[in-house]
Amino acid sequence: MPCFRCGVRQTDPVRGASPWKRGVRADHQVLICPGCQAGGDWADDLDRCAACGSTALVCRLGEVECRACGHTRDAVRDEPGTAALVHSGAERPSDGGLSEEVAAALSRVLKRGPAG
Image (cartoon, rainbow, N blue to C red):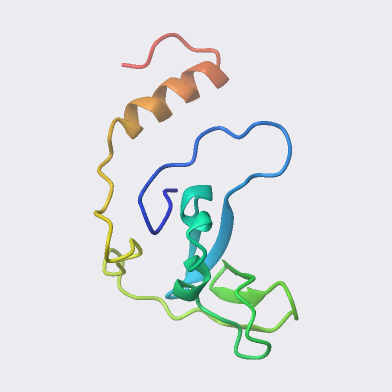
């Protein structure tokens, strides 16, 4: 999943906690890369908890849950493909070879020969 602001894709993490942050925007789970976090205003673009105002939200199984206070609500979903989750200043990322990368990774994990 790419950063919703700039479109950069997350790479394999090193050991330890990921520097990427999670959030919810328009009732969809999004990621924020370390570069966009450095800008400081990234939290302004995220949904907030109706109960406590926190941006520490997760979206799963059709619900949005606040990790700060535990408040939950139903997620309102748009028609598939209609939600533009990339910040207005960034272009939507193309596949950029992602299909080939995924096929190669699956081949490595499943100990198969080259994909194709």
